Length: 153
Image (tube, rainbow, N blue to C red):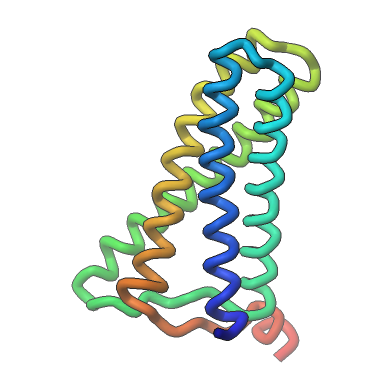
């Protein structure tokens, strides 16, 4: 198994772990377990950050994976991928905002933002795992040139 195969599996695992931790954290706060909620949600944020670091590293040094499926599904896949990227971007901004509100002890705002952030994050996790399944399990494709090679030739 090469780095090309390992990086996507590990990064997708971090996204799945993050989603599970957000669900656990939500359950904990509903039960009034504020301290446990805080710890679990921070762990979820760390897992999401690990995903991001691995994803960016892979993009820079290995490259992204190109679509390997049927040509007639490529447009649908690309629209789905764009939807996932937009969700992930919004979720990241909302997540940072939600964590910031908690640290500032603006719990009323944190609660409102947190509900929306968690729902967007769940959608991001589901679409991210779907992208992984499509690119690496159903329709394995090739990978493009690493960004570092594109820049420094």
